[in-house]
Image (cartoon, rainbow, N blue to C red):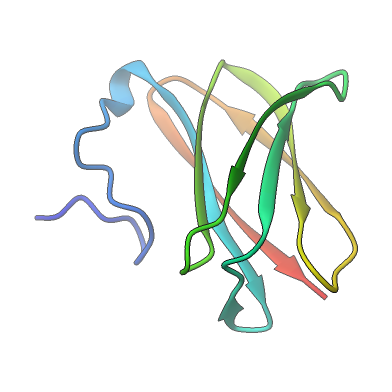
Length: 99
């Protein structure tokens, strides 16, 4: 078993019981967006972290428990904000659809 989730990122080597994981994929239509950036903003809107999406549009953050906002920035697309709740012991899976 490879530990992959819904065709997404592998969780091999990630101790989900001790981590609050936020991960997902950025899509335009049904195509992955590999040249986007996903920012993690805290509940006050302050910048916490940023990661580029992989060639398959995937991203992952290890966050503290609580409510977060994912802000996705991609060429030829308006920024997209998605609220997400992180909790130790679970993986918050998020799909971000760009228009």
